[in-house]
Length: 486
Ligand SMILES: Cc1ncc(COP(=O)(O)O)c(C=O)c1O
Image 1 (tube, rainbow, N blue to C red):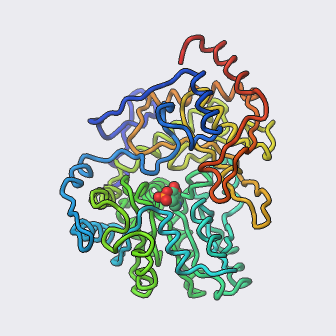
Image 2: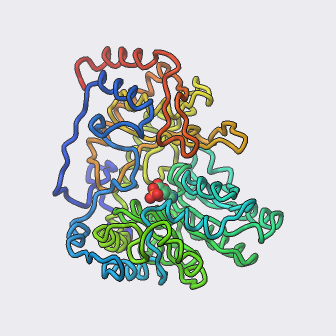
Image 3: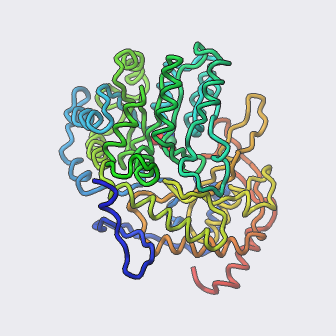
């Protein structure tokens, strides 16, 4: 389906992201009073990961495993073939991977980070360097776990919050070439490219850039590993933003991207709106290198730790990634939200990316030093003001260096994820409304400090507390402005 098919204009001229699906199963939501929201924050260590969904109104923590499944996915789950070995569900998934990602060898894994573990176990050795456009938390944690280091090679524009650059996820190929010469190919197991670069605001790379990275990889005989968790969204933005592909289909663009990579891995919690994950390749040597690790860490080679029902949903979900109407809804809602907030002066990452709207906590909380985690503070304050759960993507999500020192993030972002086909436009408008209110009252937001800090991936279960009584002051202002409204 070409992108021309999903352009629907309103007579009144308003730019409305019209839903191209209907809702047939619903889940009731609760919006608990602001006093309860404060209690919930205290119980959860001011960490939105530790809130329970009973206390959450709109769950914008992530799009991982929270996308709405289609009727076709749900029905496919009913004809799953339960078998430890040789399940037909696996062969249906293998066919889907071959049809959509054009790779014939598939290793199923229980989710994206399991693929990162297996790839790092097989290829990363102590002292190795992995060049990448940008890290993802779990990818970095696995690489460092096996003694490797990373080099992030984005262009400077990527770090600009307010930009019009269509492809902020592009890898700096000049730096890549220089780095490989300096480091030596023997110390570089692969180049990692992440589609729709998550931590810089869901920003895509272009096919032109990927072709250039391929050229450098070929020059030095290095493999490209593509993190395809957000491949569909990257492909959608290529259709929108890269003139060469203006008339192409999702399938054509995805096939070109896949062809430029030697190894593809993905979180199916994102890529196919299901659960699970996978690693795929056309290279039998790679397959053999990884094959033994799947039964070791995940499960037998035809289920990889995933339920067969989810494998069926994954197969259908992969085919649906080719349908632009399936992929476009989330990026269009995000663009709507980002554009509305930008017009009202709220500093947002632009151009609008995918997976969520990203709010610049460094500007909103300019009065909070990075040592007191401005993005974590904003995430807590926004939950308090709205019952909406976002995710801190800043220094709390960073890991300490080998000496145990804090490393401060390049960007301090509050991510408000927009899972596929889950929210309605009035809910998005509610998010906009409460965020504008919080922005206008931003001086009331204060900092946080750690009271419990896990050694690995501390952002998941870490506990923090406010550095002053700022939450009480924010509640008082909320009451003054909203009266008895939730
Ligand atoms: C780009 C990217 N890579 C890898 C992962 C890890 O996948 P999972 O959460 O399924 O382990 C994620 C998850 O959010 C992701 O966004």
